[in-house]
Image (cartoon, rainbow, N blue to C red; front, side, top):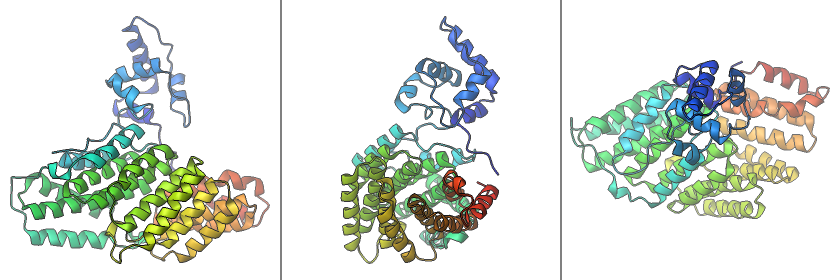
Length: 440
């Protein structure tokens, strides 16, 4: 089984070629430059890198920032551990930054690793606020190089749509192809000449590719890389003037925050996203994710308002919603309503809602089914239906393994401590044995 994701401080050390012992020595040297002492040891660095460990106090963070050459203002603005190298804030949204953001996402993905972090909450909130206030008309376009044939763009669009439209179980095999198309499209934006209409199509294609690749990275727990691909997708959608797509990308970033247990920034991001969302299906999706964030923070009334808004918006939806949210359905509202009820301490009604939603889910959405079945297993656990819960969790685990989404496997394995006291119950031992052998 793979190790759990590395702590960002360990990643920062790796990027700078430092061992725990050498980092401790550099920290002591940084203190001496300030005519003070720091009793830092290899053991202390090891403690800082433990999952869930308390952050170093502000004095030690300042010394660590000195070692890595980080502006002290970022230490305060982004907070621990988001300011560490490898987790820097994304390229700001604005004129002329689209291609830079697209290339930056690609560069960061080259150091492909599992990470504990997405974008820093402060950086994510700033990005959402920029998107809600900047005028897309300010965006610049490429102006030199070869002229792009619109028919070639049509071929690219068709090919990419076929790849992104595959069933969930097949998408795990498309990563290299998507990376290749991404590199081609960004290269055209970087070096080619094209009309305004063709430029808009290329930016939308770049946005679609970056959004899809971001989900690939997210599913494999490469959260920093996913965040930067979604940032790049937001830049490209903004330049093309597609506000609904931009709102959907912000919703993806918010979903990542929710998945990582950071509900408060997700609420703010979704609030900004809703200010420019026009399509009812898109509005429904954003309201549903906002309900999840409110439920996690125990805001029952706000959660139920958002659920009602999500249901109402979907009931008024167009027959042809944007492709990026065309999957949104009553099944999603039913299951996420149940997930909200779990967070609000109502497992009985939650199970009914989740079971109803799982039954409505199309067969092609296996990744979503794995997530939903895990919610159902958790609701059954909370009601004391251990055998039923174990069977449901086992089904979810096998499905998650088949589609190759390690974040879904980890989500199921996180339930393990709740099953361990019930080893004598039918199905539990089999589930625990399968969990132990499951790689994440």
